[in-house]
Length: 184
Image (cartoon, rainbow, N blue to C red; front, side, top):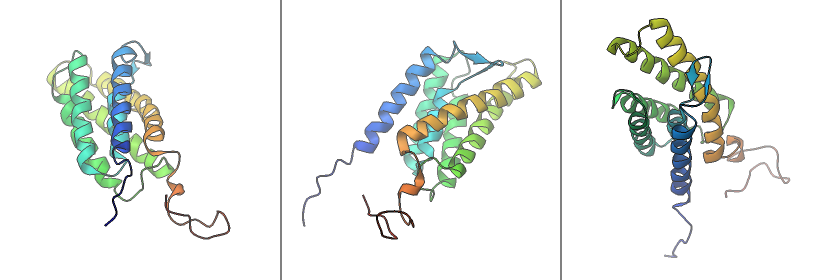
């Protein structure tokens, strides 16, 4: 049985580096940059980008750690974003299990839907707890605007983690004179 010397930690290393970048951006730019009252949630974007890779275990771990980092760096209830991102990452990883991990139209749709839903649920929970006074502000500003801004950043994280397109794997009619692409 020959030994396989491939670097199996390469994928984990890129996820850790992207997580550190998301954390630094969340701490440095998150509170500073606002558009129409909504702020970019870099941690939610990172958690959803990891979840789009299709593996449930790492997605849930990334969602939990991202949510905890968000909760500990903002003046919000500790554990709320952790719960929302953990469940959202589980749902997104379960939905995208067979998609391949790249940025396609379908993966961007799923990313946007899940991030907006996470932000709307978070805004609704803030209203229910009495932290946010207005339902309209909680749902539209904390929910929709923050979700749309965060999904744009999430697409960049997906590009960084999974490559440009999911069509680089599997069957393709284009190529070097063959109907099948080589396995890399």
